[in-house]
Length: 141
Image 1 (cartoon, rainbow, N blue to C red):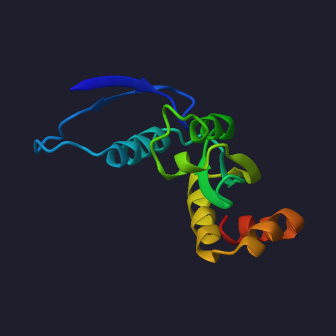
Image 2: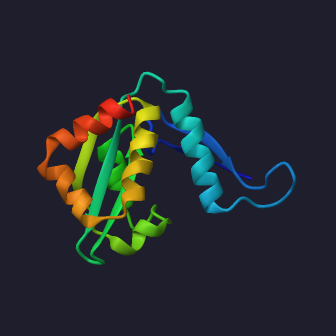
């Protein structure tokens, strides 16, 4: 079993053991990442979250997520050595838009709402019309 200390998306680095689960099966990288994300953010109730939209000119795609630290998260998405998720193929990513000052619950719900829209026009309208962002915050606040 390997132990590492990591601080992606969390202001406080956490120790996490990678290796066999209790049942003896190996955890995939994605299982590990999701479990780490849940452990790191569930303890940090005082953090304000952001929903972010990244754009990759290389593959002409958008990526939507939420985090407690935008700069660290963007650095992770653009790090060819650490990034083992879908966004690796789109490096370099640039920050297209962000919605700040959200609780974790608001961030999760707004992220899902934006993802469900599946529309480039909707994403561009978020940047053009600040009242759309205020409406989302108010609706899911």
